[in-house]
Length: 129
Image (cartoon, rainbow, N blue to C red):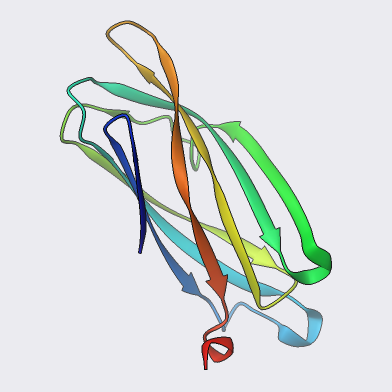
């Protein structure tokens, strides 16, 4: 598990390879990731946007994904609350990684700030041997 804390917001990531959804002969490798966002600050915050960098070792390809919220939600987190969601990514190679930021807003003063999403690797387990 990878973890980063920015301004009291803790982001943890767990990665899972899905062999049943992957098709190696077609260069399609499917990964899921579970993200837990925990508000360790004293402020109520809302997640407004996400910005991802996805690196695929196939042709050294980098994609960017940006948009509102996460999986259709813009969760509000009071102090000591957490939000967890699962999403996924497909790669054309057996290895890659992702990182990015969330744009958050403190509800008390409407100030926005960026929260780091730690870099996490996506590797087909057979490549780890």
